[in-house]
Structure formats: structure tokens, C-alpha cells
Length: 473
Ligand code: GDP
Image (cartoon, rainbow, N blue to C red):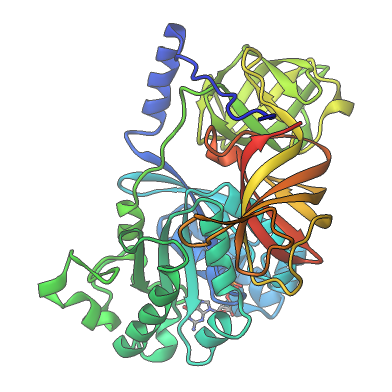
């Protein structure tokens, strides 16, 4: 058969890297690095919850919080003062929605957490995909108020779509924060009702029971975020017989932070070749001529200051002049780190978001024709050969066309249903060949998960999620 089915050789970690690897482990202080995305229906309270959490963890100091309160009051939006911690831009503040992805970092006992706050507004789903594509784990926030939970969950709301999207993008662990408990008198009955509804949906969506937990919280009141024994949740705390054991995903007494602490760390593919997918490009400041700053997450391998790398697809040879993590200079960085690199030697006209900086000895493949396995969402018109779509991959979007329908598969078992189907209907699964308008740098899902998964959208709706199974051309 034509096409590349595996490209990736494992690169041994060079002896001269073991020192920097030790630095890396020291930087993590024995903690695991976790990229966390927060999703849920608009107004479920995502920004307020995470904003209040950052305040309680003292990531945001009192002065900044005071500023947020004053600013919120000035705009007549007092109830958004915690959300302002994350909603940075003036436009977001005045509209009261989170439009772009704000990033913050916090530490718990066992984790260093990079927070990707994804927006909940319908128009902004592409941004949410970018956030989700960087995530290892997710928090799904739901509004517990009667009617509100149902709006977000049952009647065209985003709760289900977000949960499905996350799962399709490889996120397998989920914390469901049942929020605004203050508005329902901290009701155990209502909490349990919501847990039941969510778990009945999440299980057939591909989430294993053991990987989903549920926690009652109030982001606004700050209850059950980091301090245990939240007084109004006495039914949740005092149940001695069940404390610290998981019953249907509920661990009585566990706070939101406890649940984050209990998440399993993702695999860090540090022994694979270096790949960083560019999500932002800046002009470098004061580092010398010919230097450009780029930002992104290291998907695999590692990089050191003064190392050489190449830019794909242009093949410009570059030198890494400096590496920053969270505005601090470091000498090396590895898979899972979100970094800014100053690079020299690149022709700025060759540089685009979605390009990849990588190991020159093991360059990443570039493709215009790929084979992929996709899961199709609840679309109104079936997919046929020639169906156009927008290909969402990492931080980029590209025009694409579904050229060939290779197979229809059983959605749940993955077994072959028919070859060369005439169409792929809603809620089905299949293998397709996809032609991209322009070259993209990608990997097979089996080689590097993070660089092998994508979404297909059309007229503002998500059609399908997929993984790359073969690079054809
Ligand atoms: P997002 O769109 O999911 O980020 O939601 P926001 O964090 O912007 O919150 C939407 C609205 O819900 C704001 O007016 C918040 O003050 C309010 N809100 C958020 N969390 C809570 C909560 O725990 N209790 C109450 N009563 N209101 C909340």
C-alpha cells in the first residue's frame, strides 16, 4: 500500500542531556506537569471558579484582586470580579465572556497545572478546540440551578458537545464540577441527580468510570475549592463511612484541588525527537538582529539553548538562542512544557502559526493528503466524497476536502461495516482520505498523539473528530 504508516524513530536521550533532564526534574519539584482545560456551557461559571481558585491558591495577590473588583464595579459587572482574573482583555471584560485562551499556572501537592481557560460561547468553539488540543485533562463545569443544568445539557447546550470534543481529542480524565451549589441550597438530592445524568452520558461517550469524578462547589462563594469540610456541604463531608472511597465517581470530603491532585499524570514522550508546534509568533525584543520569538507547547522530545533545529515545512535552519517558561529563562525544556523560544536564522516570511520547529535529524513529515479515522457528530447532511470541511489542527485551520470514503466502521466496536460506502451518516464512524489545501506538519496518531488528532468543521459546526492513520502525500 502507498503512504507512510510510521515515521518516528525513538531518539536516545544523549548523555549530554542527562544534566538538563535533572534540571528539568528539579524545576518540577517532584511534581507532575498537567495541562488542564476548563469547559462547559456559557455562564456555567468556568471563569469565576478558576479565578477564585487562583485567588485562594494565592496565584493572584490581593492587590490584583482589588483591582479586578474595582474594574468590575466600574463596568457594572460586580458578579464578574473573579472571572476578571482570567478574562484579560478589555473586550472580554465589557462583554463578560471569555473569548481567547487565558493561561495561568498553579501548584498543588503533586501537580504543576497549566490552566487553559477555554471559552464557552458558541461562536468561540474553534478557540475551545485549540485549548482542548493542548490539554491532558479537563474540568467540566455545570450550573446546578434547576433549568440551567438542563439548558446546558439537554436542549442544544454545549455541555455534551464539549465533553465529546474533549474525549475525541484524547482527553480521558474528567472532573465534573457541579457549580453554583449556593443557589440550590447545597442540595444533596440535586447534586446526585446531576451526577446520575452526567454519568449516564459520559460512559457511552468513551469516559471510563474510574477516570471521572464529581464534586459539588460554589465558584462564587469559594466553597469546597481548596479547604475541606466546607460548612454548607455537611452531607458531603460528614459521611465518614464513604470518605476517601469513590462511589460512582464521588469521593466524599474531597475538594476540587484534592481531585486535581488525584489525577493520573500523562505520559511525557521526552525520548522522542523534538517537536514544537508554533501557536504564536512575536518580534523579539532586544535579543539581536535576525531573532524571532515563537511560542508553543513542546509535544515531544526536548531542546536546549544553542541547539540547532529546523523549521518545517520551509526547512530553514535555526539556532535556539534562548528558552523561556513563564517569563523565566531556562537552559532546556521538554515535552509538556509551554515555552517561548528566541530563534535565529529564520526568514520571518517563512514563519507561520502551525509550523513546527523540530529535530534536524528527525524532521516531522509534512502532508497534503492523509488517511484518517473519524467519528462523526450529529450532522444534518451526511458526508459524501467531495464534502468540504475546515481542518482544525493544533492552533491552525486549513481548507480541506473529504476525497474518498474508505470504510464505514461500527462506532462502538470499531469493526468494519462496509468498504467504499457511498456516504457516512451522522453519529457514525469511518476511514476517509482527506486532501488539504496547503501542507501541514503532522504525525501519525500512533507515533505522537498530540500531533495526530484533528477536528473537521463546516459552517461553524463541528462535523467530526479524527486521528491520522496514514500520510499519503
Ligand atoms: P463562564 O461563562 O462559564 O466563564 O461563567 P462566568 O464565570 O463568567 O460566570 C457567569 C455568571 O455566573 C457570573 O455572573 C457569575 O458571577 C455567576 N456565577 C459563577 N459561579 C457562581 C456560583 O458559584 N454561584 C453563583 N451564585 N453565581 C455564580
